[in-house]
Length: 261
Image (cartoon, rainbow, N blue to C red; front, side):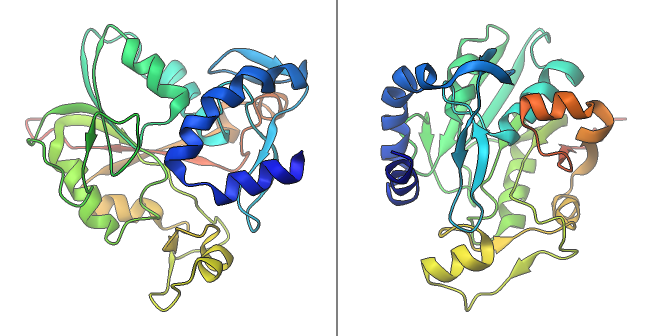
């Protein structure tokens, strides 16, 4: 069963995985009844989470069997809940690129959000477009989410600049990426083109780079001011383990300057 799970996870195309996950979530939670780990998004408890990731970056006990959150999703949710006005502001215009299933239904039903989703091919996105050229007007959105996308695109700075363009002054964005904290500088090599080599060097077959500790500088090059949300400064060891967060992960909050200030 575990072998089949890993095979499907790494072989099936993303749109099909998204559709199959709605069936999977029906019976998977029954197999993991318990109280050792907790997902703050669905607020359910389990004996453990599922494993997830490529052969090179496979991780145990990280994927919630009900709403399919990973470490990054749970961290983002905790930031939104504890540190922002995302759930309480009177009205926010939100653009969500590559919308995650664990957030999509919740955000779509929020009364205080004008919620728009976009992706190149996702079946749950409202609009389909190339992130290098967003077909939307400038200064429109208060909040932008675009997670685990910049490691796939040809020109991350161009994509970041496009997101910067459509954001209102004073708006903020969360743009998470896979990040190798042992690397000072982001690793890119245009000669690495095969899926097998890309997985070996960039952690996944469809990645074209592996960001290092310099990732905030990429956001700054696109015009953003960057703030840090440090897991270790916000949660104790017991909470980090219960929510299965990455203890050394930093969440970067990219803010568009309010030029009127």
